[in-house]
Image (cartoon, rainbow, N blue to C red; front, side):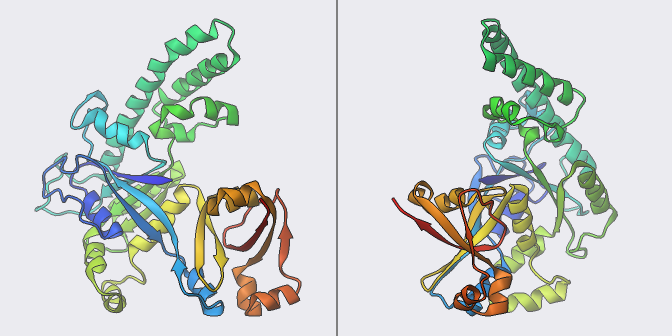
Length: 363
């Protein structure tokens, strides 16, 4: 699972990506389209529960969950018709599972805005419009072939035609497809289309270093839009976060306190991106390692076991499960078991966020 970072040129995408991944993606330096090929990086998902577990189960290694991020080239109005990097940009978005849109919510005369003025709602509208137009084009291109096949009596083709028309009726009202309700069968027949407005979205409000918590009117407008569309918002000062990323861990707390933050905003961003992708974590804990494993919300115990190894899923017998709260209360797995709090779950068990698990399997 991966999230793509998108936005207009010069909104701070690459600065944000660098800080998140501690890499050196190309900086725009006021030159649109500096990020031509997408940069990719892996970012850890901060989770205080790992340390809580480790405090009680001594281990040699701690491994957090990780998230793949893709820094995609800046978009401009007309991208759906080939402006800027046009189709190349859009093809990169089709390949990711969720969108992180960076919008500029700060004034700086030294950083040119591609539209000439700072207006985050106009930025959001520009990108959403281009993605809507591109999705309409994808759907309209697919419809004739589906209709020809449907005329032969093919049931799946008939469903596809009906589903495409359902999508077109919705999106031609300038509504993103993530707001369209679909059955499981409808979602499956269009899953290969890579429809961009169907992807979940998270907004990152890039703010000034004097407003690190995003309390200005521009951020308020982004929050209101996100609330109406069911999206999340994280205010981030990319400039401050870039400085934090360069500091030694021992110096970070003092710096954060000085600028008014309790934790790097990027930590909250990583967690929100993880949530936006529909993911959560379960843990395995032992002397060798304490580890967070990434699974989709709704995954069953055998599916969660399969993330560790396919043999675990294939030969799944049962899962022994307890919570981090149980560990805090009883101090050890032995005492959790003695207290009768160790649950034995079967193949139909749906994993909860934060479960600590031992899988039993036989291949």
